[in-house]
Length: 125
Image 1 (cartoon, rainbow, N blue to C red):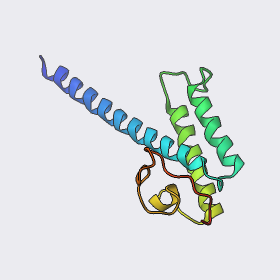
Image 2 (cartoon, helix red, strand yellow):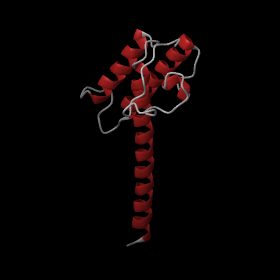
Image 3 (tube, one colour):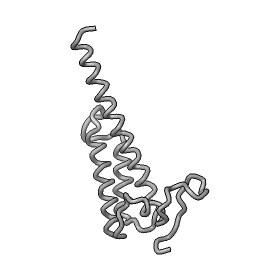
Image 4 (cartoon, rainbow, N blue to C red):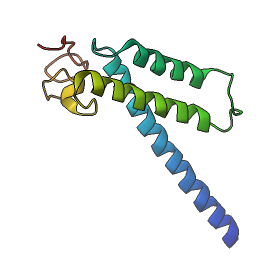
């Protein structure tokens, strides 16, 4: 194999690994935001932004053709930022902190024999 082919394969593998890492991080943030949306302290507009961005992402209609997912990922990231800001504004807590996601216990979601789910607790209890 020639040197330029090896270099091209190496760059391609690095780009593929970076894209996979970004996809895993985005999927993790989507799951955390979905869990956050189950709370009662999330405004309706934030819920609509999240679900609208998710529908746009899986929709076949796009502003930019589908081989380029920059518009889809960008819209999802904007929706995630908006939901986080709306929850932070309403509750005064950072939704990225474990206590905000687990109902204030500080324990990770799925602990204490809840069958892998965080217990649902109304705010203020």
